[in-house]
Image 1 (cartoon, one colour):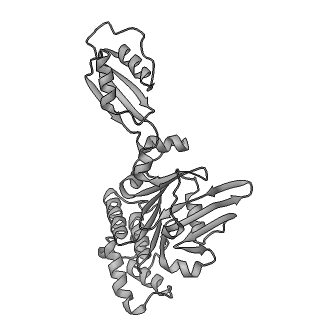
Image 2 (cartoon, one colour; image 1 turned 135 degrees about the horizontal axis):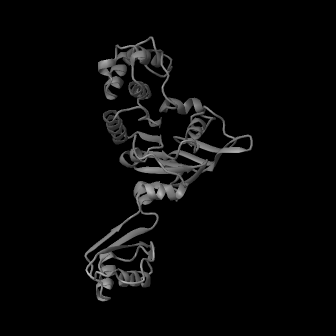
Image 3 (cartoon, rainbow, N blue to C red; image 1 turned 90 degrees about the horizontal axis):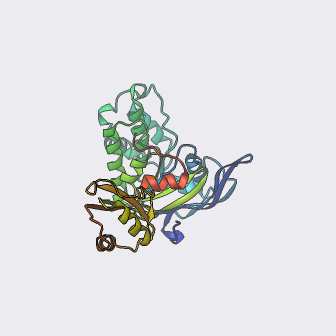
Length: 328
C-alpha cells in the first residue's frame, strides 16, 4: 500500500532511499510519502532501519542512493533552508548535566542563528510549560529522570514554530502519565498545522496517536497508508457459537470461508453442547447477516456470532514476521 499524493502535498518524500554498510542494506530502496498535517507513525521492530532513515532525512547521514524531499525542498542540497523549519529529537536528548533545564534551552536557542534573542526567555518558558517541566526549570539536568530529559528534548524542538516535527521514540522512558502528555502535545501540534513524524516500535503509541503509518521490516518498507486503510487490509474473522458445529463448518466452507481447523467429523455426544467455529472471511463483500441467514437456513442453531477485522498487531506481524511491543 503506497501513497499517491502529489509532491506538493507531502511534507516528506523519499524515492528509492537506500543506505548500505558494505554488503548490508540497512535501508533498502524505500518510497515514503508523508502528507502535510499528518501525525505519521514510522513503525517497526528495533533494528528495522527507522533511525537510519531519519538520520538521512535530516542530513545526519548520507544516503548511498535515492532522493529525499523535505517540505518541498531537495535534501541535503537545501539543508540550510529546510532545517530551520524542522524540529527534531533523534536518538535521545543530550544536555549539559551541570546546567538547569531552562539554562540548557537558553544555550541551545542561542546557537540557533534564526532564533530572535528578544523573545528567548518567553519562548523557553512556553516550551517548558508545553512539556510539563515548568516545575523543574531551575533543576540541574543531572537530577532529571530519563523521562524528564526526553520531555526537555521535545521542548528544545519546540522553541520556535516548526512546520515539521521529527520525533524518534518520543515516549522512551516516560511513565504512563508522561506518555499521555506527549500524545496530547503531538495532537495539539497537528491541530495547529504542524506535520509530526513519529518513529516508534510501540504499536499502542502509533495506534493511539497517529493518523497515518508506515511499517519497516529489515530495512524495507512493507506498508504505508492511513491507519484506517491498514486496519482493513487482510482477512476478517468470523466466529459462530452453536451446538451444530459440524453442519456450521460445512456451510461456512461452502460459502468460501477458510476454516481455522476442520474439527471433529462427528457431532458432540451432547446435542446441546456449544462449540465455537472460527473461519477467515476472504470475500469482504459478504455481509455478516447473509452468513447468519445461510447458517440458519441450513439448520444451524446460531447462539452467538461475531465478525472482526484483523487487529493492527495481527497485520503488522504478518507483514514483518516479528512481534511488536504493545505497550511500554
